[in-house]
Image (cartoon, rainbow, N blue to C red; front, side, top):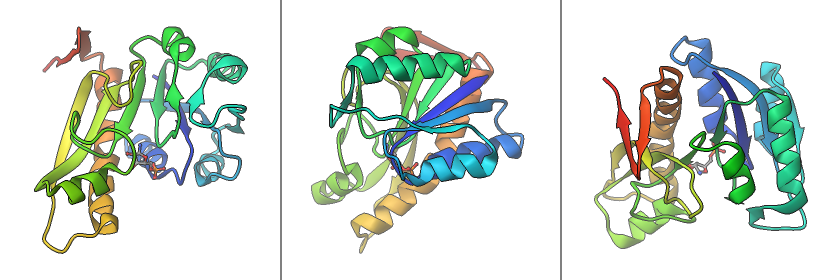
Length: 202
Ligand code: GRF
């Protein structure tokens, strides 16, 4: 399975995907890593793996991927033979063009148990709300913000004395398990989407 990773930040989830492939837990290859942030560490991580890494501007927009930039992303993803896209900390809203080019083929990782706490800094939202359980969600991307069909979720406890940083770190540990696991389900053709429900074959 040819996976393209798109991200804007430090790329710890991308690293978890590389590590899962190397360990034989994920039967896939990463064909490219793209970032809308020129100096994002995710690009450096890709280069260290010998994976093509490209900075691709998404200007003039600040929070979405649309228009000419979106077309460039689509062309680049196709050029690398992408089958599945893993959004790993991509800080932009994906719009119709990319969704239509890769229907039910774009996954996102979100640091909360959706549908609770969509949007930014979800771990902080969970803490401020007083939730006792937090976690992460891998889901298909649709036109909304963190609204697509859920593939899998991992809970983590919120502990007394947690700060946003400690809770985020605990959630990230589970992200690094969840994302490769979800991708492996796709690689094994065990995932079927029916409406908003994802069925996983045993
Ligand atoms: C993760 O917390 C992910 O849930 C969110 O963005 C963060 C990316 O972290 N979508 P990293 O760049 O993979 O380290």
